Length: 140
Image (cartoon, rainbow, N blue to C red; front, top):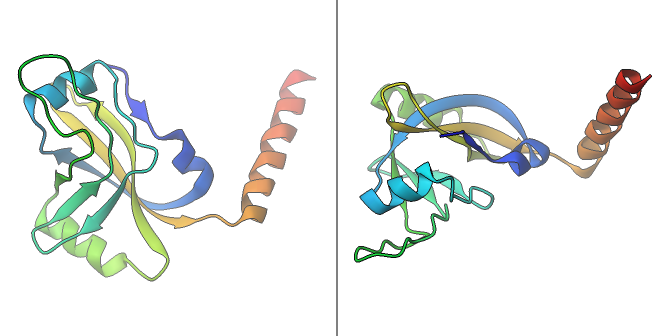
């Protein structure tokens, strides 16, 4: 399985810290993810009393007898030490965004999440100018 990357997040946010976590999934969701049918674009994470919850990740249903809800809340598996560190580092204006879904060598599905700060429009324009300058240097 190729990693599924949230490319829009890199454009819209500045990553401050990244973490790797497991995800609580159903069997039909695992099959859909291994086929690469996942949408991470509008998903985000919240810190709850019970742990980290992933909201709004779209995993389309497959045809068959067992159907799952496509945009249900999913629990992320992090250690208590990591949850405390994330909780202490969250300030006003920061959010937790999923960046990538991949499989580890043991075959388990993992997710990379990041604590992010939103970019302003002028930050996005500077990134675009820098990329265009790099392209011109490579082409000449």
